[in-house]
Structures are given as C-alpha cells and as structure tokens.
Amino acid sequence: MIKRLSLRLARALGRQLPASEGEIEVYAYGLEIFLGTAVKLLLIVVISLFLGIFWPSLLVVLAFAGFRIPGGGVHLSTYSRCLFIGLTFILALAVLAASLPADTGVLKSMLLLVALLAVCTIIVWVPAGTDKKRVTDPGDIRRQKIKTGLFFLLWFAACSLFIHRGQSTYALALISGAAGGLFLVTPWGYRFFSSLDKMLNGKEVSA
Image (cartoon, rainbow, N blue to C red; front, top):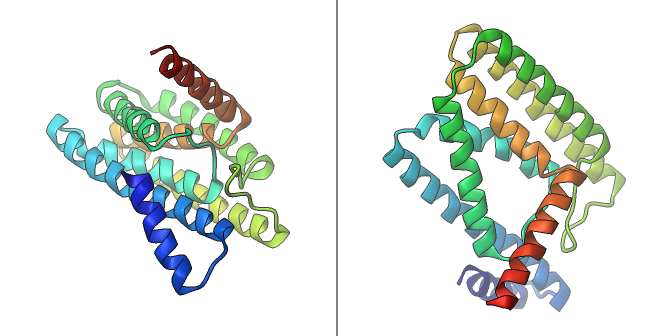
C-alpha cells in the first residue's frame, strides 16, 4: 500500500515539475521511505507506551536515526520487511536497555567501543548508498560526513552526561541505538541484510 501510494504521489509531483521517469522513481523511493518511517514511528510510540519503555525507545530511535539519516546504509527489498524487522530491532534494543543492568565501567567501555566504530564508519563509509540512491559528488560526500560527525559529538556528549548522572538505562539506549544505526552503514550490515533478503526470498518461493 505504501509503495503504491508513494508512486501515485511521485507521478503527480512529476507532472507538476515535470520530471523524467527516472526522476519519478527517485521521488517514489524517497516518499516510500518517508511514509514508511512515519508509520514505523507511530507503531514504535504505541507499542513502547504499552510496554512501558517509551523513553528508552525514543532514545534508541534518536541515536539510530541520527547516524542512519546522514550516514545512509542498507535497506531491505520490501516495505513490509523493513517495517517488521526495523520495528523488532528498535524495540528489542529498547527492551535490553531498560532491563539490563550496567555499571559505569561497562558503560564507559561500551561508549568508547561504539565511538571508535562511529569514527571509522564516518571516515571510511559515510555516506553509504543504495542502488536507487548514491552520493557521488565530493561536496555532498563531505557535507554528509560533517553532518554525521556533528551528530556524533552531540551523541557522545549526551551519553557521557547520562553516564555521569548514573542514568544507565538512557545511556545504554543511546549507545545501543548508535551501534545499530552504524552497523547498517558498514559492509557487514549490507552483507547481513542481503543474506536475510535472499533467505526470505527463498522462503517465499518455496511457499
């Protein structure tokens, strides 16, 4: 449904501009991501309120999206897969953050490890593209790296503040959300989700 709605909106936008068929496909892809994200966020809010983990979920989403939006990364081939797996992924990280005890030393070690991953990812792989959207202009690449780097500084400061105040749940939510978002930008994330897509495709064929 989201895909069809996105295509209709993109075609309407293409008639107004006007735009080529290739440009319409890019518009549709962007609209599909936007609408799909809105639905996913709504479901995360509803489910997290029901489970009593709203604030950990919100912090996981903020950290995840803060690296993912400027950094790019892998997407699954269908909206339903992105919705279900993304929803499960975010809520699982929030549940872990809300339920796992973590002392200051462990949190500091985790923060440093994820910070190291962030720095390497920003330098080497940001912005990571898809078949439908790739960033090739050197100026755009530099801007995306700067945006991701600025968010990294804000994220690191927020994590450090939560750790200093002894708010381990919030610190762990930000750290785990960042780790999840960064993983999807790396080649390992691409390989993992590519394998997952192939496995799901095989199950659909056999069914």
